[in-house]
Length: 376
Image (tube, rainbow, N blue to C red; front, side):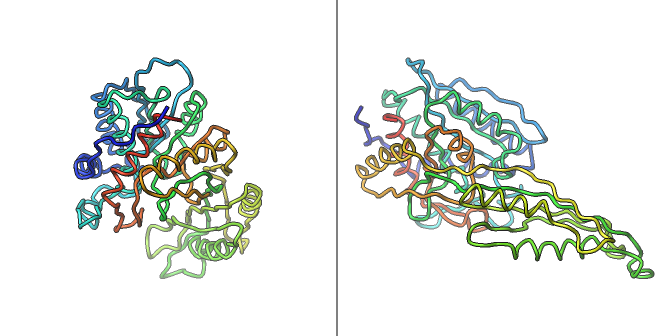
């Protein structure tokens, strides 16, 4: 089948539609906010003719949406795998990152990671429907609610759904060079707690043993374990309640990332072997969410070759790479299901108050996605 690529994608019109999504703030830890975003996207998919199902959330996270589009074939289909949670808290629109367009760029919370990519993928399906062009296989869209924290409540759903499909397309942001992702590094998260001994910080400071002090030592030691093979970082810390009390507890979250599974396994052993620097303060380290390494095989490289040919017809290059910054593609790729990631929008500075996208890439990447849906 020769893909039809001259579909009437309009980047300006797409940006206007995307604006409603960006302005529906949906931070992972606010289940009600995520559910509002899921309802918005679910209605959009239903209007397109999909059979839409809301899957209740668990573990305190928001719901998921699964949309299936009608198709004559009963063979295994294409899974479009995306998330609608973001790292930006509700209020970011009013405090630091309002939706706005400045020339060729548009800004807003979650616009790059990954509402822009999700929107263009769904628009690609819509363009094919309007043109009466069938997809090569049945298409399912799965929108999840907790990817930004490692998908603890949705990994089982993702893997079960992926197993029913032949191909997985992930519209996470494009790489800085406009390329796509054919592999992801392994990632592990850890939860740490130090437990000290309280005392009055003014009257009896010497009697206390500070959990915060011990955690500070551990953070320095953890981050100094970083090598070229594996990184170690601490991104969350909470400790104490009153400044006039020596802190009893301090909690932190650490993340390690490695290109090879064996290096991550070694990192896990090192983290779990950490011990307190003093007998007066206890340290516990628990392993959290893990994303397995995804290494490209022949099927993934063949999928990329198909996408690259489509990109050439559209007039742009499409290099590929293995990448850090895990995604739900880690799971499907590690399962051996042909997965192509990084198919989303071109932009920069995700997870910051300068997060933005290149508006025109909504149309160009949308055309690429529509082409893939016709031939994979």
